[in-house]
Image 1: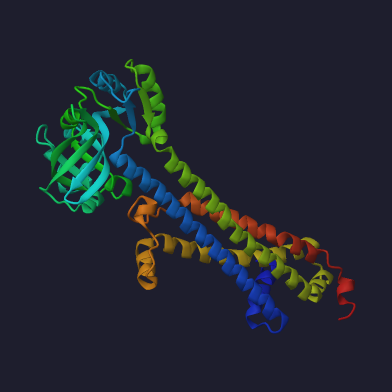
Image 2: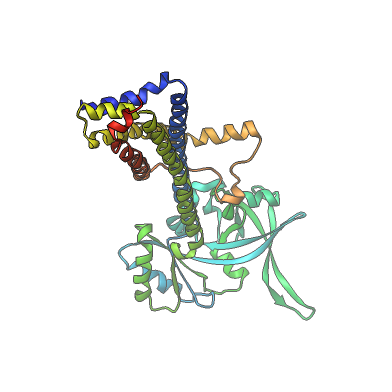
Length: 417
């Protein structure tokens, strides 16, 4: 083992028995380790939560929405069968489903709520969405043409205080013109199912009915609002949408999920980037603490450095000694931060409820964050990037103090010894 490593390790370990000024240097070293560890742990946890949030948001949105949708310019798509047929000819489109989407008011007793009504064909809808796994009561197959059944989101059903088998009133905004006045169209619907997608936007504001019932209610004839498509790869949806725009000869708009919900994902990505930059400042502060630690260590070890120089140590060897000393401080902090960050990121489902139980505060409100649970997904690439950049910052912090140590003049340092 090279003597530079032995000396550097000895300088680091000797602080445990240090007195006076060396004890203060030891305290700053401990602060540097803690700062590095906390910064790395915070970065791992935050990036894991952001990754999990991004994936969970995407999964839940696409579990209710679609990869691609084709809509008419004026809101109605007349030749939807032709659109579905032409879209199905694309090799990467695995399923199609027509739909009707309009706004309505739902009323039950004294409760009234505005909602988005989506008319679907149950068999087709199951192929482009994941409603089957979200159903908490009833089934999407209970939607039958002419029966006027309705499937509600869990939060919407709770707000209206309705359950299975209850009959509520649906009020369409398009009215009927009568000699007396314009009267809104009103229809009784029976609750035949309740779903919970885990995303507040859908659970509190979406109701499903049979497509034919929706066409009758909104007087659309055989037209629909659009056709929803599912592809074999959701990340290829933008390219597939561009290709479909050239294949479909029916006038309409082709949008993929990245455009339909662009604000969600841009906001998450922006927040992830800013949080990464902010939290890296914690690691930078810890690195500056290493600078101060080594500067004081160099001042304290002037005589030791001079003796090593007179024994034949080169300036480069002296520099390596203090680089290793600072690197050991950084590595200890990094290891502690990585271990702590991984443990915390993988056990957030236990930690968050425990903190909420102790403090009485709500740390995760699904009405604000759209999804009901705090997700976490640790990516090895993120851990490697965080560890690498933090280690580089630590090494950069050791360069100046180590260079100062290598420039010590032995004669000057030993003059008053």
